[in-house]
Amino acid sequence: MRGRMLGVFLLLGLLVPGICYAEEKTGESGWSEDWRDAISLEEVERVFDQMQGKESDFSPSRYVEEVMEGRVDFSLPGLWKLIIGKLENQLADQKKSIFQILALGIIAGIFMNFAGTVGNKDLSETGFFITFLLLFATLSAGFYTAFEVAGQALEALLTFMKALIPAFSLTLCFGGATTTSLAYYETMLITLSLIEMLMVHVFLPGVQVYFLISMINQLANNRFSRMAELVRSFLRFSLKVLFGVLIGYQGIQGMLIPVMDKVKNNSMLQAAKGLPGVGNTLGSLADTVFGSGMLIKSAIGVGGLICILLLCFLPLVKIFVYTALYRLGSALLQPVSEKRVVSAVYAAAESGKLLMGYLFAGALMFLLSIIIILVCTNLI
Image 1 (cartoon, helix red, strand yellow):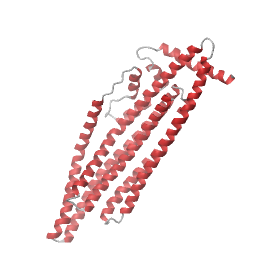
Image 2 (cartoon, rainbow, N blue to C red):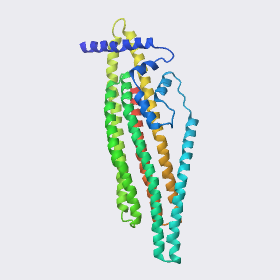
Image 3 (tube, rainbow, N blue to C red):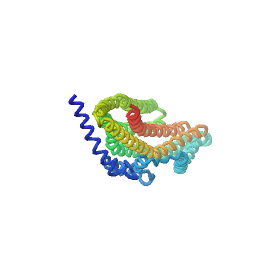
């Protein structure tokens, strides 16, 4: 009984100052000034602006303010126009590269299919290998550009999440999910460490290894084909395992821990409502405070989701266009060029597909981690 009464008095101490403070600053912005005093998004804003540069005018703190004031506007046609514009820009940037690859592939096919019939076969082989080396240089330049894009995007994503997680974890406490907040914070620290250690320092360099082995394999008459296949299988399987383990663990936590917070909050609220005279008033005030806290939590969570999408959208478009064009190039070269040339271009496309998979999986992990917490803490 003493423990319950102590909990009631603690709840009163948390509610009364917050309610009085809200009335002092209530105005056009309502709660928007209160949450700014309790939760600072300056670091999140600074990191997002630093990572995004001048490519976006989205502001996380301004978005939360608009949610609190009921002024959020979402335009699907505007989003579609943005996607089409980015695709057109990337197609224009990659057009020169793919034309060079097609030209070199056709020249290599000419050397192998026709030069040997009218002249010295050794000369045609020499011409083919020179052309293949030029093709290898072109493919390497395109791949390492895509590799840099994927690496920088992952680094930007990790840096942004390191700034967002403390602020988002604090907002969970506003809705009474204190245990969930602590568990989420610990889980996300583990997730950040694993993604930084494995994806950035192991898996992405592994894609480089796969690309180089695939190129060497074409010059060595497919002597390294099994090794290239082994490296690709390892990279794909490791990504599935990492994604499944992290999301599965967060999903289990999301189903169990918010229930504990719900039971604890209900017991304290029922005890507060049972107080003679002021019970109903305290219950209404507590519901208002917790409801406002859930709105703040949802606004910051959704703002974080939008920031993640903006940080990863353009890099994903760049790598997608790179992969699609190289796949198209391998298909166009197959009837007219030499088999090794086609396999080299296709291997470059597969390397881009692996890069896109790692970047997409990294972004999806963080998106799902926030969505799971938002859904579980709102429904329970």
